[in-house]
Structure formats: structure tokens, C-alpha cells
Amino acid sequence: MATNVAIPSGPWDVESFKEQGLYFHLVEVSEVLPGSARVRVTDRGEMLMFGGYSYLGLIGHPAINAAAQEAIARYGTGTNGVRLLAGTLPLHNELEASIAAFKGTEAAIAFSSGYIANISTISSLLDRHDTVLCDKLDHASIVDGCRLSGAKMVRFRHNDLEHLAECLRNADARHRKLVVVDGVYSMDGDIADLPGIRALCDEHDALLMVDEAHSLGVLGATGRGIEEHFGLGPDTVDVKMGTFSKAIPSIGGYVAGSAKLVSDLKHKARGFIYSAALPPASAAASIAALELLRAEPERVHSLQTKFAYFLGRLKDAGFDVLGSQAAIAPVVCGSALAATQLMMHCVRHGIFVQAILPPVVPMGSARLRATVTSNHTIEEIDRGVEVLTSGARELGIL
Image 1 (cartoon, rainbow, N blue to C red):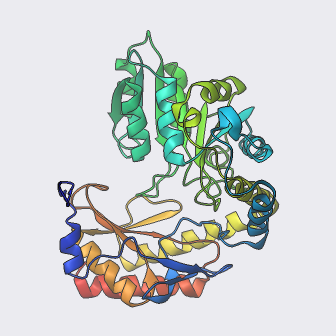
Image 2 (image 1 turned 180 degrees about the vertical axis):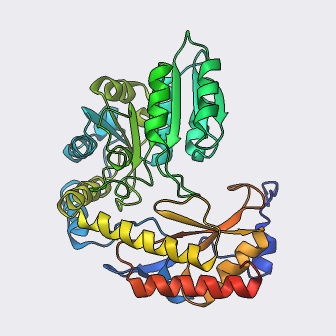
């Protein structure tokens, strides 16, 4: 019997990076300090977090914790099964109604994760006769959903409307067409050109789906996302996908849209039919977080102001941050070695930020993926930029 089963190594040689002391992934965050941008890391102590997704600083919020604890006390830690059978709780229906109201749609469906939401929705909407058009930088879950659908998959150049128009013209007009984009791109921080994409979809009779994992709670005056950011109505996007694991500090994914779309997904989407229901605590936490987002839109303004300051300071220092506009600041280093060396410089100076290497990003564009939250102070942001700058100069990146 074989005792060691290994997956063939790819571009990222994990063991080599570990041997060189250039590995800072799968680390234990042993404590999140509520109301701050600080965490404790096993074997590292207290660090300033510049690598997390808690954009609105809601992890550990007392109201959210209390809602989760109350749900456990009432319902326990799990459910009696999948949603379609014995697994639906009042909390699930309340969560779906809450997200539909927040996104301005007739209905919504909650999935066990954002990844499951994307692959289940896309593969349910399309078949082998259809065409799905996705941005070259779309999230991996979108790409996987496109492949699972069996539809003809066409990838257009990133945020290139001329190329998208060409691809739409070449698509089979006899069958369904679906355009899928990210609201905020998770590795670059730039925003999809929603007005232009919507116009092309209308011209070519295509449906539009937007993944708002990194734009819910981030874009728009009240955090409602990309439609609000561009001043467009809530009927602009046909299929609105998002997550409960970033600005909303829980777990799960959702799709919001028409009542018919949601009903069809609840009875067809394999990731909904065959996946366990969201645990009660997770559903309750998401509901409480959405209530806080409605009640405290100043958190969104704080995040946007602080991110603009952070991005401006990085640019002033000379960093290449690509076309970032929101949520994520890509600190481009070039080689995987340079990125991991800069990462470890930051770690040694108490800054928690991680390197993103090929094949996740293109060769030659390895980077640190840096974020700030509404909980960061200006002094903490300055400290983060100072550490990044000193390390980059020392390594010859700047």
C-alpha cells in the first residue's frame, strides 16, 4: 500500500519556499482583536492586518456574536439536512429576504459558500447550446462554473468592451448568452465597467451576472454595491451574486434576482440541492451584519476614505498598483522571489500581508495583496506603507 501520495508540483514549489524561510501561508490567526485592525498570530504575536477581507471591521462585533450565540441556543449547531428537504430554518428565509431587500430584488437564494453559488448558478443557467462570456480576470469559481455548464466559454480581454462586443457579435444568436464579470476584481482591485457592459448586453440580448464578493459593503454610498456605485437602478444586473464571508463576517454565498430565477435555482442548482444548509449561527450572523450595514453606512464611507488614502500613499511611494480603485491594493513586485521576500520583510516588522504568486496571477506580476478596513487608523496605514516602502527599497523593487 502506498504511504505517500503526492500531487505533481506546479509553479509554486511550496517545500522550496519553506526551506528558504519564504512561506507565510496557512498561518494560525489565534485571536482577532475586536474593533481594531490587529490580530494575534501563533508564534508571531500581535500583528497589523493588511491581508484580510473584513472590509467593514465587523468580525467580533458584539451584536453579530450575540445573534450567532442566540441562534445556537435555539436551533443548535447544524440543521436536519439540505435546504430542499428538512434543512430550512426560519433564519434561512429571513436571510434571503434580507439580502433581496438590500439588493433591491424580488428574491434571493443562500448557498453554503460563494464558490458553490457561482458554479451552481452558472451551470444551472446554461447548457451546451449556449455561450458564456467571462472576463479574463474573473474569479476561479466563475471559470469553473462556466466549464461545468458545458456551454461554449469565451474569455474576453480584461475590462475591454471592444473585445466583449466582438465576442458577443460572434456568439450564436439562436441560443442564450450570459456575460459574467466581477464587480471588484479580487487580485487587481479595479471595477467592472457596468454601464458599458449593460449596454452591450442589451444590444446583443445577453443576460448579465456580476460577482460582488468584493463590492458588497465596499462600493456605493451605502455599500449596496456596483449598481449604487455607478448610480444605476437595482434592475441593471440580472443575476447578482455575492458572499457572506468578506464585508459580512460569516460564511456562505447568495444570488439575488427575480422570483423565477431564485425558484428555478432552488429546484435545479445542484450546489443548493445537494449541499448542507448554512449553520444557524452563520445565517444569524449574516442577518445581523446586514442590519448593521443598513444602520451604520458611515462604516462604508470610512473604508472608502481610508482605502483612497492607502492607495494614494502607495502610488506616491512609487509602487505599481495596477488600476486599483477599491478594496484591494496589488503591490506588484514582479518575480515570485521578490514578492515572498517583501512579504517576509513585512512579517518581521509586524505587518500581516501575503504574496500572491503564479499561476493565480500572470508570470512576472507576483504581488502582495494588501487591504485596509474601516477599523484601521491613519497612523496604522502610514506604518504599513512605511514598512512596505523600506522593504521594497532594500530589495530593489523600488
